[in-house]
Amino acid sequence: MEEEVESILLLIDELKSEDHNIRLHSINSLEQIAEAIGEERTREELIPYINELLEDDNEEVLLALAAKLGELSNYLGGPHHMNALLTPLNTLASNEEQVVRDKAVESINSIAAKVPLEVMQEELLGVVKALATSDWYSARIAGCALVRVPFERIGDKELLRLFEELVKDDTPMVRRAAAAQMGAMIQISGSKELKSLIEGLSSDEHDSVRQMTLESALSVYKTEEELLWLAKKYSVDKSWRVRYTFLEHFREVLGPVENAQELVSYVVNLLSDSEPEVRSIMLDKLEVLASKVSNQVIVTQILPALEKLAKDPSHYVKLSLMTALCQISYTFGSDMAIVRALPMINQLIRDESFEVRMSFAENMRVFNEAIGPEKVITFSVPLITQMMNDSQWRVRLKVVEYLPQLAELLGSDKFTEHLGTSVMKWIEDPVFAIRESVLDSLKQVSGLFGENWLKQRLLPQIQILVTNPVFSKRMTALRALFKLGEILPREEVVSALQTLSQDSVPNIRFNVAKCVKHLKELLYNDKRVIESLQSIKEDPDSDVRFFVQETLNTLGK
Image 1: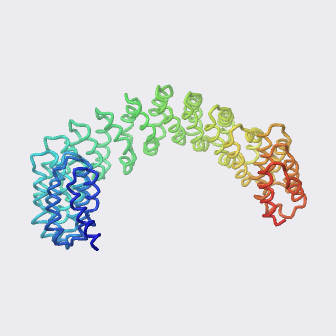
Image 2: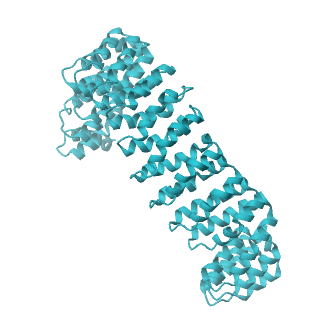
Image 3: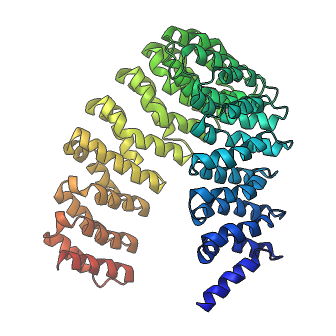
């Protein structure tokens, strides 16, 4: 007990230590101190003691104080005593450091949500009004964020008037803070006067204020007329950062809008924006517009703007263009997609940036569905074959992952005729991840076309690879048996495993054992497999002996 008391006393003494790390440790232990000394001493001794720490110039210490003071509200003896925390938090809420100020505001708001109404009216309301009318801009910033909770609880009209003054404040940082809270205040108050101030803030000389205003406006603008006005206003903003922020919310802006014809000219201008970031994000959001305008508008006004971007110097723009072309191809109609979109895709697919090339592989499903199976054979299959010769393995991998969807689109006969031979060669790709992915895709394709398809198409290729002089190709055959053995003819699987069990490379031999273990349900009672494993049970290679014995034990032999 004495040790515990001494520990608490030490923590209290350390609150004023010259070493800020020690002070920080003690501040983070304030709850432990408060619990030990009791509610009354916490109110009458600990909080006043903490007030003396507020002149500390260490940001980390002040941030910890701002956080911990909010948590001390549970150790004061009930809601009626929470006002004891307002004095130190009021000071911290005026701090010039934003992180300290924000944390103090968070703590005050948490207290404001819990105190009785009489405490709020007698104590808290005064604190909020004092901050909102302070000569210091940092205090007024805090006041912007503190008005909402007490107004929501007691509806003090003076608070609403103060907030309107903060919206018109001379300091841009205060107006920005007010703009961030405006949406919530309008929703709570229903004030038409406050809502009318949005238009003024949306034309503020400082771009950060206009950005914050946009987000608040979106929370209160619900009609098509309001949203179209907002879109037109922000799409021509002089700051590219504001235009970019607007496009980040493009889907939200256009959500309730049924016909976005009025915005087409604005979108065309954004597609030729001076900043590549804006052009890129506009392309990313183009699908949203496409669902809100007629196909004729897309063909006559949007496509010409896209054709200019096919040679854009920014690879980020070309990457977004490739994605956009695929995503909105359904709006062109099959013929127009071939005539207008495909030439751009052909140009982009030769881009030096592999990410641009890979984008088509990632999005070709949508494009292929738009042009239909017959045109896929004529136009997309050559592109697929071309991409499977790409030097960047990630591009090839994306193509391979798409094969099951392509097989479903084309059907068994057309897929086999136009891609069957190529796919069987792709299992020999030099990159392991691609070989594995081809096998996984073939397993899915066999689920669509039936096991006989796989037996007829893949089995002859596996038989060739089993006796190939190149080690990696024999290993590929073994991986094919591992993944597909359950749906291949048992006799052929056993024959291949017998051959590979006598391979000159130890890696092949012990992988035969692992494959047999994996296929134990299929092979557990096959004497030929057991004999093959028994023949290498005493193999010179220790890894081979280990895996063979492990497999034999699994098989119960």
